[in-house]
Amino acid sequence: MKNSISIFLLMIMMSVLLAFAISCNPPKDDKVAQVERSIQEEKENIRKELNDLRENINDQIEKIDRQLKDASDEAKEKLQDARKELEADRNEVDKTLEEVKDATEETWDDIKKGTKKTFARVKDKVKSASESIAALFDK
Image 1 (cartoon, rainbow, N blue to C red):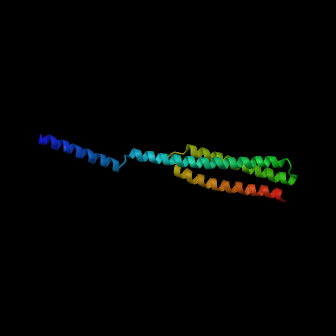
Image 2 (cartoon, rainbow, N blue to C red):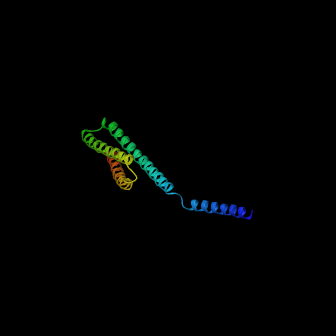
Image 3 (cartoon, rainbow, N blue to C red):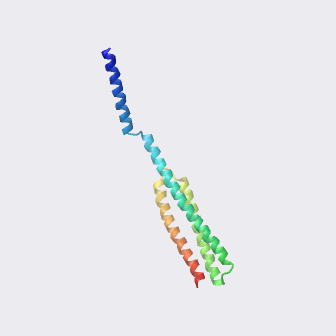
């Protein structure tokens, strides 16, 4: 009887130790899942920023289209040039969105760095174009 109790207590202690050991070191699968979740969250945030930038570009193009109707010949030429640049910027954003979508865990860090550079550059160009367009009509 004493042996049975000792064995039973030993089994309980081993179970507690095993449970503690498992909880201290999550399995590698959990770490991989956490990395994948983190990458997915980053991708989603970047996609949102790029889509917002794309919408801003579309708004600027629509604004140019409205202003072309009443613009002087000189202003029309500048507006058309700005429109072409904005369309090129929009294409660059679309390309970057595709790269983000297709990024794998192995390529993600490089894609993320390139995307952030592209985002900053295009955002500055769109802001500059917007200011230039506004200046045409403030004269």
